[in-house]
Amino acid sequence: MAQSREKRKLKQHIIEEWTGKVFTSLCIVLLVVTIFSLVYFVATKGFSSFIKNGISLGEIFGGTKWKPEGEPPLFGALPFIIGSFSTSILAAIIAAPLSICAALFMVEIMPKIGRKYLQPAIELLAGIPSVVYGFVGLSVIVPFYRDIFPGQGLGIAAGASVLSIMILPTMTSIATDALAALPPGLKEGSYALGATRWQTLARTVIPTTLPALMTGVVLGMARAFGEALAVQMVIGNAPHIPKSLFESASTLTSAITLSMGNTVMGSVQNNVLWTLALILMLMTFVFVFIVRFLERRANR
Amino acid sequence: MSAKTADKIATAVIIFFAGIIVLIMAGLLGFILVRGIGHISFDFLTSPPETIKKGGGIGPQLFNSLFLLVLTMLITVPLGLGAGIYMSEYAKPGKVTDFIRLIVEVLSSFPSIVVGLFGLLVFVNVFGFGFSLFSGALALTVFNLPLMVRITEQGMQSVPQAQKEASLALGLSKWKTIKSIMLPIALPIILTGTILAAGRVFGEAAALLFTAGMSSPRLDFSDWNPLSPMSPLNPFRPAETLAVHIWKINSEGLAPDAPEIAAGASAVLILMVLLFNLLARWIGRLLHKKFTATK
Image (cartoon, rainbow over all chains, first blue to last red; front, side, top):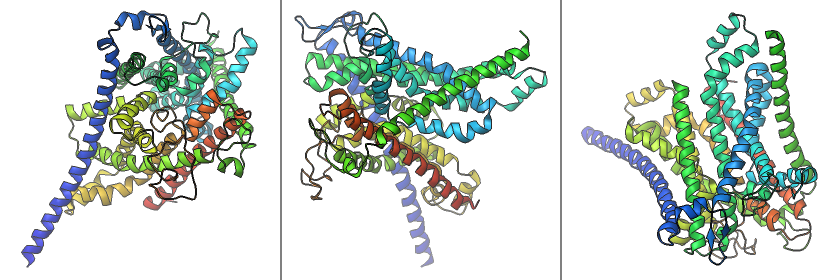
């Protein structure tokens, strides 16, 4: 009797052990399969414009004219590529100093107010949906630019402004974490040597946390590069290379957003749009690679 | 310039820039709330939108957003918990685990529009779910899984090692230990993270354009049979969410009061995000109190 109960218990134990293992393994396998199929599908669709439709690499990456309905149709994606890079780089240039200053303020200058009020507020702002940023850009920033500069106000400047505000919270919270994680001994050593706060910040704190601060900047840029709707709402969507920052332009994401719904699956234009998505995906890989590289530098 | 003056100038500059950020953020929130809140009324929240007339509401969109949120979380939470538990408890350190970590990181930084396109190709076309809430929920699951995995891992890692070992030493199976000892301790962190992830689902639009669709059929709110095509509960009908609606009326809205509707809808969206945030904080603190017996 006792023995059989023991056996039953052991059996139950083994069953439990296996349920856990099988369930969690299934979940992780599903996740890995999803990621691989995502990369596979986007890549095959993206390459089909080169392979099936015979469009040359040079035409897409070097062509400056986007006329999918023209005769002959032209698929130069250079305006979109330039638009995406210029908006996201500009956004990062605007947001990086601001966010690093905010983080310095929160960690080094007024830690009490910073931790109690500013940090929760910034975390909250990180959760605001991007369409809301687009809407605010459309109703505040675009009219503002329209009044001051020639043109409609739509364009790369408006896109970059909206994106920089959008990525500010993310960049600030990463910079704050980086600064807060610095061992206090370093700073105290510098103060003990008689350095002022600014000397400590400029010569000790910022150089040691630089890789981590850069991680925040790159992540912010990656987010700006992949953002679709907020940019699409304020950039104007003209498929050519703009001559000024205040002239209507396009990005990779805005081109996909606008045209994907109007083209037939499998048509040449549709395949080229998938190629644009492939470029977005490859850029994601590049950004992740840079972040990994910076993290390795930060941990050394 | 002496070091002291430099210090003063630098401090002033930093405070100035921090002040600018605070102003931008406060201005942003203030602008949306001031412009939008006046437009929110019971009628606005419940009535269907109008295409060319004034006075349309956001009723169906609000319902779609909430329903989609529930659907997405129903799929995301078990999957994310499982995968996160695997990464934190079962995965052996090595090349394979490092690789999985890398690709999860890659997935978490994919632009949402690319995830949406993948959803269009696979869920809408290959699996044949069409433009539907279900396709949208699956796309958002892909989009949110990495976050859920990271949250679960963080939660599991916060469990004291001794507690886990004590349970294993008493002869409990590993799964039982995870389920009844570790998960309850990790719950505050996991729950807080999940609510914040839910806020992200609520505001996401780009991944939904090509999966859940940009239109809603006329919903019959008296029909609660999930199988009928007019029923709000049918997961296989197309559904425009609140975030998608804001985008659509801004880019192609024909109603004369489109800016007001966009402002009102944005305010609703912001208030919901605020609500999620406060809820996450409150529940986190409550659970923390309960499990750690601190006041």
